[in-house]
Image (cartoon, each protein chain N blue to C red):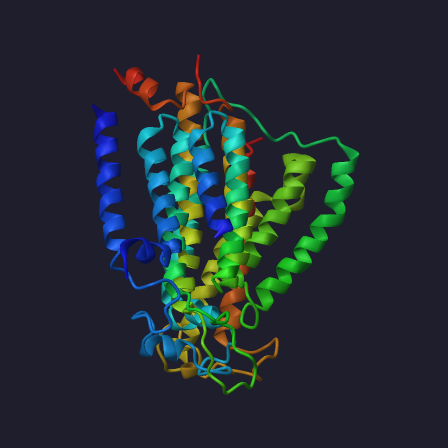
Length: 76
Length: 240
Length: 122
């Protein structure tokens, strides 16, 4: 239940922050906690895949995309 | 106006979803309607009819391995499309990220960590039929170890370790390997991607070399996913 | 069963729907393209959480058999795990493709803001 609350809070933070890099870091934490939730729901295959794909590859993709574009949302 | 439409859509979606929720079966119900004769067959005790202990691996590489072939194809096409989009002439605002780092701490730690990650990835790939994990998770870890090397030592040195042409060849070869294992089932007189029915040896249950076609397909998927991840990041960090 | 209790025993489903709605909100309401892709990912994990929660049963074990065991205990539903495993892999390939399109768009237009991109078109 604490994990679920953490997930929702992380999702809201990703939605609210204007800094894309911060959003990516929070998103990686979100994915790791999601892996914990998979483990609690007795799906260890998903936990190990989510930890590798969600927290690893997806976050790296976002980091690279930010590196090749811009970090802040506000464009002035 | 558009903001109003988005909000209205959101409110309608929330209302429909939460209204449906009140009628859903309770969470964790042991006699939920999703548990039926099909689930019982997937959860056959011991090694079952497939020679595989992990029921999820049974489904993705045996009962529904045709779906997994499609999934691997989607991954292949998606990443190939991304690479095609990113190659070619870049515009005014392009940034290159192929630099790497000069930090000795980072480089030493990477030298120690990368082999450990690769050993663990090999374990996850080859034990997918006995323990959690399998081709997709292990392949991603194997690819991620290369991505770590790429970020720390720069694209030039990473390209010397794994030439992009080699990576693409390995990726395509592993996809062909999957189809060849499937065609092996046809050659032995059963259906495409058949496992035990085609006479692939099931082996001793719980042994490393067991599960017949499942083990072979898992190995191919692991290599393929690793090559896909490595290729994607080699292209994402920029050409040249 | 009263309405509040009915919702409480479905807490996982509620969290899944909340995540789905937050993702949908980001996808629809945010002007930044990278943020939209993040919203899409949150939406996807919401759907995955819903599916895996359906497969869970109280006091069940992970769906991995013990060798030689003939006992049939209660296991979590492996079918949803297989479906969601496919979904995770598809999600990362769509993310890679969408982000590469976003990078290309930025290299040519110099902005990630949807409203600015629309003004550029005119």
